[in-house]
Length: 104
Image (cartoon, rainbow, N blue to C red; front, side, top):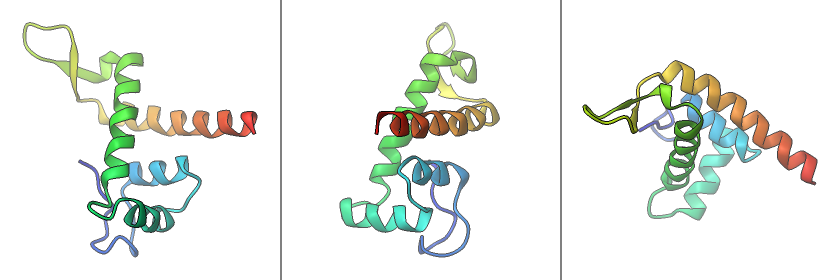
C-alpha cells in the first residue's frame, strides 16, 4: 500500500503515487488529503486506495506484462514492474486530465 510519506499528512513530501492521485483530482497533495479526511472520516486513505485499485486494474488490462501470475496460471495477479507501472500511471493521469478538459 502506498501512503503519504509524512506522518501527519500535511507536511513533508508525499509518495509519488499519492501525488498522481491528487493531480488526477486537480488538487495539491495537502488539499487532497484534507478533502479525503472530510469525505472519508473513518479512514482518510479510503479514496486513495479505491483510486489506486482502479488504476491497477486498468493497467493490468493494458499491460499484463507488468504483473506476475500465480504458478500454473497465465492470469496476471500481482504488480511486479513498479517502475513501468509508475511511468504508465503518470501518463494515464495526464490522459485523464486531458480527457476532462476536452469534455468541459
